[in-house]
Image (tube, rainbow, N blue to C red; front, top):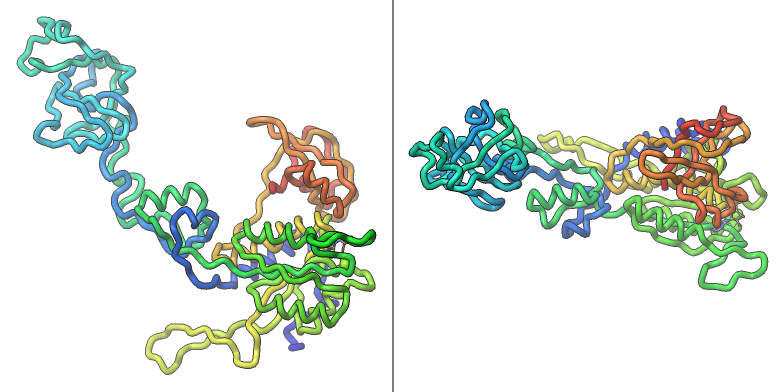
Length: 457
Ligand code: AMP
Ligand code: MG
């Protein structure tokens, strides 16, 4: 073990916030793998690997945002007034300047989404106008050449220049960036890419994340468990969480509580981009994970966090970091990443406690940001929205708690209360809950009606 490495025994139990920050710090240093080019819809949930720029002005023309009449605002500074309607523009029609240029006293009927005609600087909403029959328009007061043979509209409301249309290029100018590399593509970024004509986009390859469940009592779900055996649910919750975080889960065979086989499987897992272990990180006689990792020269960053569930969570790495050297023989200063010939590249691992709720919660709190970073995303600070507590909570101090809870209520009235559960092994309780209430370590009692932070799931 090199002198820079921290053995498991020396790495400490950190506060939740310090542990999370440490993961984020490491996550900021990892670089994503190669790039795939995929059809736009297949990129949903993936991390963008290219900048997407506006291929033209957004909007590409002065775009009406209301149905009504395109006018010169000065013509409607006194209302009511009457204007001659010289034509109609629907969305998709390009106004030919020869026929659609508005002169004093004229208007063009316009629909939402249509380009404004030349000289118009506002749109009056149709609700504030009345289209006049020819007879009414022929009223002597309007007996003027410019009204002849035209429909007329009475405008009852003034508009100022700029009202009810979006000027060309005001959302984005051609060439301006719309989406940055490192953004996760959700439905709105898919829409933005679509509007810029990107039918295929570059995304980062999903990092391969090894999932290794440990424990003599843990059996594959395809077998019938013996009376003292437990089905391996953790490899499934983790594979699902890995997928939503942007990774590709590689499920390894279940490791027994036996050092050699455990070590061999850990080595196999370390060939992936990240290794997630579950179980075997507590203080029991057969909790061998830390020891097996230490035998593989692991460096430990923390071996516990002051949280419940999930206190024994472990974070560390194996192998050396890639070295950065300057390609001195080249005249350019491009940096070349090279692996030291005798060292494996650095691989991170998390040892997650085996209790199924602990596994799920510690994944969300610690493993997710690392997978997101390996998938090309910039680490995001974790925030907890708040909801009003429905019934009092009493608990012990000392740990930050993430307790299964039910978020209910409607619209602005989000309410939350603890779900009934038997502790961190109670996977069934997760079906009765849809979030976690976050309880700070110094609170013994939280009153009904207080706004409490929650971790959504
Ligand atoms: P451990 O962290 O190994 O002490 O395990 C804590 C508890 O979680 C024990 O009751 C285990 O049986 C259970 N457990 C461990 N691994 C799994 C798994 N992969 N799936 C479901 N339960 C597990
Ligand atoms: Mg175990």
